[in-house]
Image 1 (cartoon, rainbow, N blue to C red):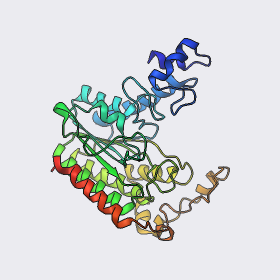
Image 2: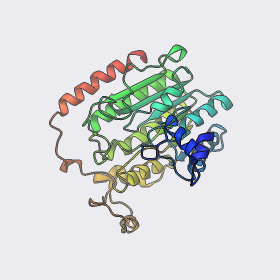
Image 3: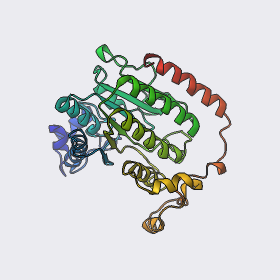
Image 4: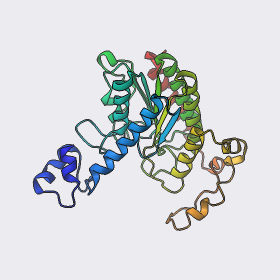
Length: 329
């Protein structure tokens, strides 16, 4: 943390710059250092801590912190756009302050490696991550054989999805896994990470899902929380690199679900979820998007080109799920 703080000035010393790389910080790397970095990263972490405490103390049933979810950072190293791991910090706080059993659910298209390794030997924290297989995508981890270690063996589950996976296969694997894990693990609270980069439009991955998964996954997690944790649920943000077409809609529907907004019934009953609010295009008038902006909450998937290997991809995902769940059921 001292090095991060020293790198957060406008003119860090040559000696401090020479230390940056060993802490995962490089001027031209994935996680560059910048003026004010420590204050910004600390504020994000504080937000996740506040959300966790508000829910576990009973002051709130649910809490949403979209600035959080920086799941790639490690205890002694930044990584993958993440300086401090706010999710792991919040979970550690829940363990130390409340002795809570925590179910962590990560829906980012990139494996939640930092959070997993923080708690790899802790039987009281179950980490579940659904992501594109690390065979083809950063960070190159999150395979089904990663199940935890020592007393934490079995408290880690990875759904390593095939490239070009579509909605039905993604949601089938996700639903079966989280239902089985929640029933077996019996958590006191759920902490979820909501990266929205598994969408077909995202430029940094190879998954072919639509906005439908970003309507369904928050609903599924909400129902799990109501059944298993007396509603206690902390949701964090995460990755997402189609900033205009995907992120606003995905996080909008997450907020609608967490706040139990009446607009949800309209989204669920209308084709493509119905039209976005009237002022939505006005908000985005000055945005420089190279693609037409959406006008509906959900996508017109029927107009998309079908995946030619759909049956093969679905079969591989099903086989992976069966292996992943062997130590849960």
